[in-house]
Image (cartoon, rainbow, N blue to C red; front, side):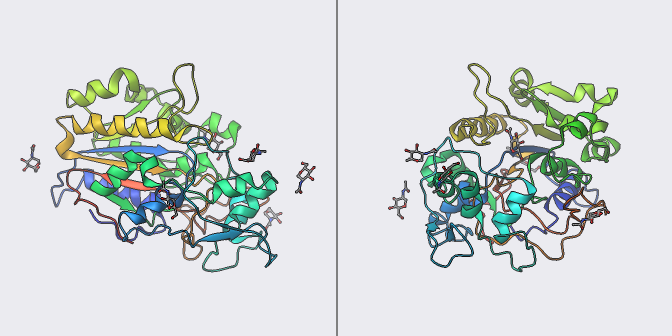
Length: 365
Ligand SMILES: *[C@@H]1O[C@H](CO)[C@@H](O)[C@H](O)[C@H]1NC(C)=O
Ligand SMILES: *[C@@H]1O[C@H](CO)[C@@H](O)[C@H](O)[C@H]1NC(C)=O
Ligand SMILES: *[C@@H]1O[C@H](CO)[C@@H](O)[C@H](O)[C@H]1NC(C)=O
Ligand SMILES: *[C@@H]1O[C@H](CO)[C@@H](O)[C@H](O)[C@H]1NC(C)=O
Ligand SMILES: *[C@@H]1O[C@H](CO)[C@@H](O)[C@H](O)[C@H]1NC(C)=O
Ligand SMILES: CC(=O)N[C@H]1CO[C@H](CO)[C@@H](O)[C@@H]1O
């Protein structure tokens, strides 16, 4: 497993890669269990950019990167990328329009490569104290995200992995297991409640005779796929606390495992999805728990664990997001007023792939 450039259609390719790994009749793969954890709303540079200090092959930051408060004013205050992120951050904008401004500095999307200049400016439009502008131009020093620090140094970090849609959480989460958002470019409660109709990797796995299971905490977002609500899949949903450690310990994890985190704070159980303003420390504790559980499982030797993020959550990233040659997954055009044709990707997000079959410290662009 290397970290060669992942094609722009990250999740579509991702889904195919997973199927291939699990179901390759020609070459026997040692991987029999793939575990997927999709964290929330943080960019690559925000979480992992400073890890370049530990491994110069990682396409991260060195502090020379900056955004101006106003992209049209040459004398505007500059915010250089810094290492002072806090565990509990404000929640910057990440709607379709907000992300367009972050990437291009305006509503004009013609620039190529994408300039990545409008993060501080967009944050300023939400908070004119400049506090949020400063916070989007910051990342964590490696020792403040020690679990990722360890995983990045031991396994593979992907530094060319972009959110599938330059928009919010649910369109991107829909992409993860079905390679499309079915036209969604925002979180639309009524459509999510109805469920999205597209075919997913779960039906493909089912058809190929490969087992799958969803270990959820307070809400399985995989239920936003209508097909997963079929009665025959009821037994695929397991309460994380009751079943994950037990199944892992017994060597009974299915072939494709989705671990869903706690998306809401409950009394005594803080949210652990890393979505601002949720505490990143809780996310670290959770990732560590999943990792330790897998490592201790008799299935570890055949396991591939993928940690990725749905989207960048409004935080700066310096790598131009692909804006040319991105194929639409299904030709569906997004709703007005943007009529988005799914011809560009979102901002780069952290992705770490973990397996005993991965060479230590794999990370290059
Ligand atoms: C791990 O898997 C490989 C190939 O499937 C096998 O040769 C090896 O013995 C296994 N090691 C352990 C510790 O199970
Ligand atoms: C910031 O916004 C507040 C109102 O929302 C306004 O009173 C204040 O003048 C603004 N400050 C600056 C620096 O624009
Ligand atoms: C902005 O940050 C300053 C200094 O950290 C703090 O005193 C102030 O309360 C913050 N303002 C807002 C609106 O968060
Ligand atoms: C943050 O960056 C500064 C300047 O490069 C450096 O001196 C400092 O040690 C860094 N802080 C941490 C916690 O890594
Ligand atoms: C989006 O599509 C609608 C309906 O086809 C059309 O009326 C509108 O002008 C389009 N808007 C843009 C910005 O292309
Ligand atoms: C769990 C959570 O709060 N996630 C948020 C991530 O961002 C989207 C917007 O894209 C919010 O709607 C989600 O609530």
